[in-house]
Length: 188
Image (cartoon, rainbow, N blue to C red; front, top):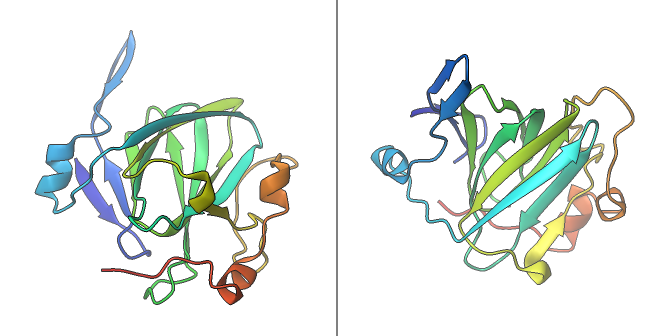
């Protein structure tokens, strides 16, 4: 597995080999030993799948759980643009947005550090995103930022009118969350 650093402190793009033949492909998308060799410790506490149709935008979601919540995500069907925003107060990369195009056949995964916001926009007819979480989902600790916040100016890459949940569409801006002291704090 190769590690590609990004503009966001602690965010890694992971590149694993993909073996393809006339039957399809095979890919090892998560190996704890490879992460540990790269200096990353990650323990899975929950695993999720999210299936969405073209032009769906999900996010921007984040956790304020005291134990933090890191994620490893990959696309297992279709194509999507994975969006990560550094919202950690005190982070040297606060406010930065990184968009990583993901597809099942490409071999890319994304390791999200604790405290960043995450979302994605679907660019194929359907897409499935697989998540590994370092802490379980806790509804009272999960918050969202409006995916169309003018301050962030995220380019979702969908080719039609974005389809968003009522909750995401009504979410506050990053500035509103910061003023309400509802953002995670950067930890090295």
